[in-house]
Image (cartoon, rainbow, N blue to C red):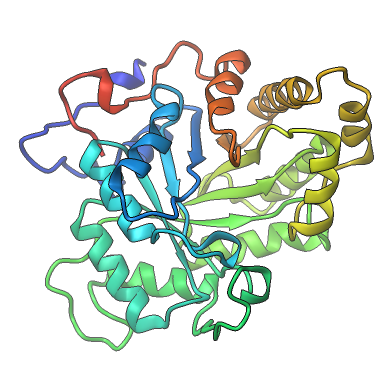
Length: 335
């Protein structure tokens, strides 16, 4: 099948196909069996929309959707709703992140409706990092909801057409909902069970934290299969190019949930060009992950080196000649 033949009509809303929750291209590709690639842009500290477009362009032709992060690391940036709206305006497919840290259920339900009204087809539900990790530790955290309760509310908004209060919605949001997971964080035996709870709550796709260690990832996927989840959720494994052994050590020590084996750091430390070695390692990881049963794609995170995403995807060959849609590919506009 030529996945680029998935149709769209710029003059009218795209139809929602049978068995689909949204009209978005990401969901269509996943349900058609494509191995997808997503990434996330560094959110701008700016009110200039051109900053968003400039950061999205390096992904053209290499990713199927772009995450609009929601205060990642509890740092202030342009909001995820605004970034998603600007990406849609240009023709990109955004994944709007919704974190529970900063807003209560009233504001969050409003954001889901507002994002859907602007054409957002993909939303990622997450609890969010604590404020102590960011640049405003004096801020008051909200955490009215956690990821699972947010997914439950989002599913009711879409499927039952009502707010959590029971009040009816005139036009429900048609959205493909996702969540995050960390296969390598302790306790590892508990991770597949937590994933099952998120799927039961309403998660249809999963993006994971960085996975730099393949054997425990394979074990995680075997457990997920044993729980019967492979037919219920699409799993995208997180990868990324490491700049150097020093940056890898810093990530391991300071970024919650990131596990980087000693062997990876030693490999980087022994390379003549550590940045190039980090990208080579990422290419190898993507290729290995591609062959793991139940994996539907990769989520490539390359903070402040977004130009590396194209190189990693190109060299890995996982798209197998498919060119993801982007604004410059033709006159059609696809969300």
